[in-house]
Picture (cartoon, rainbow, N blue to C red):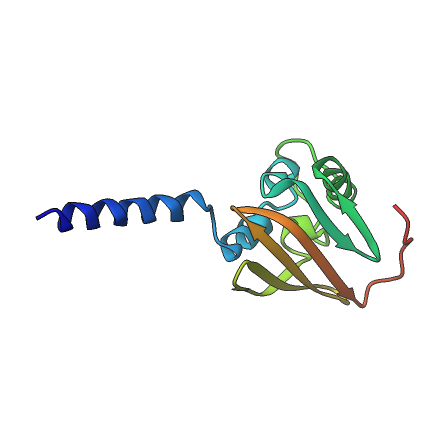
Length: 144
Protein backbone atom coordinates (compact mmCIF):
# COMPACT_ATOMS: atom_id res chain seq x y z
CA UNK A 1 0.00 0.00 0.00
CA UNK A 2 2.91 2.39 0.50
CA UNK A 3 3.97 2.10 -3.15
CA UNK A 4 1.17 4.32 -4.55
CA UNK A 5 1.75 7.31 -2.21
CA UNK A 6 5.50 6.95 -2.73
CA UNK A 7 5.07 6.97 -6.51
CA UNK A 8 2.76 9.98 -6.32
CA UNK A 9 5.29 11.86 -4.18
CA UNK A 10 8.08 11.00 -6.64
CA UNK A 11 5.95 12.20 -9.58
CA UNK A 12 5.21 15.49 -7.80
CA UNK A 13 8.89 15.97 -6.99
CA UNK A 14 9.84 15.40 -10.63
CA UNK A 15 7.15 17.81 -11.85
CA UNK A 16 8.40 20.45 -9.40
CA UNK A 17 11.98 19.96 -10.57
CA UNK A 18 10.92 20.36 -14.21
CA UNK A 19 9.07 23.58 -13.36
CA UNK A 20 12.03 24.91 -11.40
CA UNK A 21 14.27 24.44 -14.45
CA UNK A 22 12.42 27.26 -16.20
CA UNK A 23 11.40 27.74 -19.78
CA UNK A 24 12.84 25.64 -22.60
CA UNK A 25 15.42 27.10 -25.00
CA UNK A 26 12.70 27.44 -27.67
CA UNK A 27 10.44 29.32 -25.25
CA UNK A 28 13.33 31.63 -24.30
CA UNK A 29 14.10 32.38 -27.98
CA UNK A 30 10.43 33.02 -28.75
CA UNK A 31 10.05 35.31 -25.74
CA UNK A 32 13.29 37.05 -26.67
CA UNK A 33 12.10 37.80 -30.21
CA UNK A 34 8.65 38.84 -28.99
CA UNK A 35 10.23 41.50 -26.74
CA UNK A 36 10.34 43.84 -29.74
CA UNK A 37 13.42 45.71 -28.51
CA UNK A 38 12.03 46.32 -25.00
CA UNK A 39 15.25 46.35 -22.96
CA UNK A 40 13.65 45.29 -19.68
CA UNK A 41 11.98 42.29 -21.33
CA UNK A 42 15.15 41.33 -23.18
CA UNK A 43 17.31 41.50 -20.08
CA UNK A 44 14.98 39.23 -18.06
CA UNK A 45 16.17 36.34 -20.24
CA UNK A 46 19.88 36.67 -19.37
CA UNK A 47 21.90 35.25 -16.49
CA UNK A 48 23.85 37.93 -14.58
CA UNK A 49 27.18 36.74 -16.03
CA UNK A 50 25.93 35.94 -19.55
CA UNK A 51 28.16 36.42 -22.57
CA UNK A 52 27.12 37.56 -26.06
CA UNK A 53 29.47 36.95 -28.98
CA UNK A 54 28.85 39.36 -31.84
CA UNK A 55 31.05 40.66 -34.68
CA UNK A 56 34.28 39.30 -33.25
CA UNK A 57 33.80 40.56 -29.71
CA UNK A 58 32.57 39.19 -26.41
CA UNK A 59 30.14 41.28 -24.38
CA UNK A 60 29.96 39.97 -20.80
CA UNK A 61 27.51 40.69 -18.01
CA UNK A 62 24.00 42.11 -18.02
CA UNK A 63 25.04 45.80 -17.87
CA UNK A 64 27.24 45.46 -20.98
CA UNK A 65 24.61 43.39 -22.83
CA UNK A 66 21.95 45.99 -21.97
CA UNK A 67 24.22 48.71 -23.41
CA UNK A 68 24.62 46.65 -26.63
CA UNK A 69 20.84 46.36 -27.01
CA UNK A 70 20.33 50.03 -26.14
CA UNK A 71 22.47 50.91 -29.18
CA UNK A 72 20.63 48.39 -31.37
CA UNK A 73 17.12 49.33 -30.22
CA UNK A 74 16.90 53.04 -29.34
CA UNK A 75 14.03 53.42 -26.89
CA UNK A 76 11.00 55.33 -28.03
CA UNK A 77 8.54 57.31 -25.94
CA UNK A 78 5.56 55.26 -24.77
CA UNK A 79 3.06 54.78 -27.57
CA UNK A 80 5.48 55.82 -30.34
CA UNK A 81 5.71 53.53 -33.36
CA UNK A 82 9.05 52.09 -34.47
CA UNK A 83 10.08 52.85 -38.04
CA UNK A 84 9.06 50.10 -40.50
CA UNK A 85 12.71 49.31 -41.24
CA UNK A 86 13.64 48.83 -37.58
CA UNK A 87 14.23 45.22 -36.45
CA UNK A 88 12.55 46.11 -33.16
CA UNK A 89 9.31 46.88 -34.98
CA UNK A 90 9.01 43.34 -36.26
CA UNK A 91 8.58 44.79 -39.77
CA UNK A 92 12.28 44.85 -40.67
CA UNK A 93 13.32 41.55 -39.08
CA UNK A 94 11.74 38.30 -40.19
CA UNK A 95 12.37 35.25 -38.02
CA UNK A 96 12.61 32.30 -40.39
CA UNK A 97 13.09 29.40 -37.96
CA UNK A 98 13.29 28.66 -34.22
CA UNK A 99 14.32 25.28 -32.81
CA UNK A 100 16.29 23.67 -30.01
CA UNK A 101 18.70 20.84 -29.45
CA UNK A 102 19.28 19.98 -25.81
CA UNK A 103 20.12 23.16 -23.87
CA UNK A 104 20.66 25.24 -27.01
CA UNK A 105 18.01 27.33 -28.73
CA UNK A 106 18.54 28.42 -32.33
CA UNK A 107 16.99 31.14 -34.44
CA UNK A 108 17.51 32.22 -38.03
CA UNK A 109 16.32 35.60 -39.24
CA UNK A 110 16.74 38.11 -42.02
CA UNK A 111 16.38 41.87 -42.36
CA UNK A 112 16.91 43.18 -45.88
CA UNK A 113 20.30 41.93 -47.07
CA UNK A 114 21.30 40.74 -43.58
CA UNK A 115 20.85 37.06 -42.73
CA UNK A 116 21.67 35.72 -39.29
CA UNK A 117 21.77 32.64 -37.11
CA UNK A 118 21.72 33.00 -33.35
CA UNK A 119 22.49 30.34 -30.79
CA UNK A 120 21.37 30.60 -27.15
CA UNK A 121 22.84 28.31 -24.49
CA UNK A 122 20.21 28.17 -21.73
CA UNK A 123 20.74 26.94 -18.16
CA UNK A 124 18.03 27.12 -15.51
CA UNK A 125 15.78 29.20 -17.77
CA UNK A 126 18.39 31.92 -18.44
CA UNK A 127 20.62 32.66 -21.43
CA UNK A 128 24.23 32.11 -20.36
CA UNK A 129 25.78 32.37 -23.83
CA UNK A 130 24.48 33.86 -27.07
CA UNK A 131 26.39 33.73 -30.35
CA UNK A 132 25.24 35.85 -33.29
CA UNK A 133 26.47 35.02 -36.80
CA UNK A 134 25.50 37.52 -39.52
CA UNK A 135 26.15 37.76 -43.23
CA UNK A 136 25.35 40.48 -45.72
CA UNK A 137 25.79 43.25 -43.15
CA UNK A 138 28.09 46.15 -43.83
CA UNK A 139 31.39 45.84 -41.96
CA UNK A 140 31.20 47.61 -38.63
CA UNK A 141 33.83 48.49 -36.06
CA UNK A 142 35.18 45.42 -34.27
CA UNK A 143 35.83 47.26 -31.01
CA UNK A 144 33.22 48.08 -28.50
